Amino acid sequence: MILAHDNDILATQERIFRIAVRGDLSLKAISLDADIPYNTVRSYAGSGCKTVEMPVSALRKLVGVIPDELLSLLLPPERAIVAVPDGIDMDDFESMCRDFLETKGKAHHADSPAGREISDCERAKLAVKIVPIRGGVAA
Image (cartoon, rainbow, N blue to C red):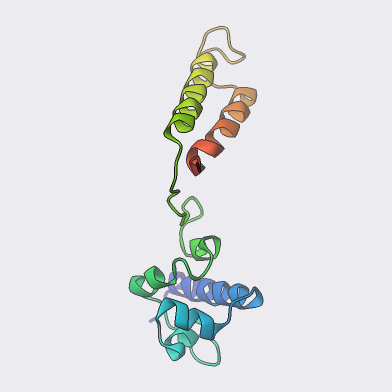
């Protein structure tokens, strides 16, 4: 018996491959680059056949072949597949972290707009500082 959850996964898989193919990829290229047999990739994409749910081993092979933002559609909305940055400038990263901590410390002060709580304007300032920290700093 196929559960509703399973149908969502299969529909998402089909969507991922449909978008990838609309871009500059083909199922054949995906097959070759991921080292997955062509007919197996077709079955994951639901291309001319019944869609088969991908195992984690296939997902792992597709990382780096299909864009991370597409593969992330298979995960809960609050999760994403991201590449670990290489060449991080540790001094820049430290500066960004210290800047964030200083701003957050000021937001938890009795004289801040919401007192010890973080106000909406402070949350916006902190969010802007989080983005480069989460992404890392390439050298």
